[in-house]
Length: 158
Image 1 (tube, rainbow, N blue to C red):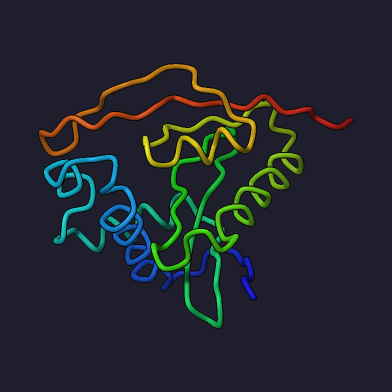
Image 2 (image 1 turned 90 degrees about the vertical axis):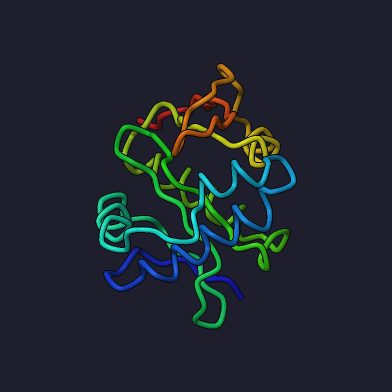
């Protein structure tokens, strides 16, 4: 059974493991090795990563006490991080996280969800009603990475 909970300080290493797994094992089908290495380097600044995770305060998905995914929703409606561990792909983790994002957006009265989405994740976002607004290229550690700006307009309840 997969459960969702709020971020806790100390989750940072497990979240990094999910991030690495999602990019290195899943996104590699859509990106070159050079792009993967730039996006998810093997060596990283743990303090900087911890500060980032503490700043975005993601929802955390667990199975049997093991972190298998995470995603955040910022008050603006922006989804900064959305990652599922490779071993947990296709098992409902992403859907559970996306439904939690929608629930939180409704609680906050957010009218639109937005995100910058990898080629790998675009079909997943499209399945949940997002649309591609524009295709972009960003440079990460000197390497160009393609992604899409995506959005979903929401009905805000009174």
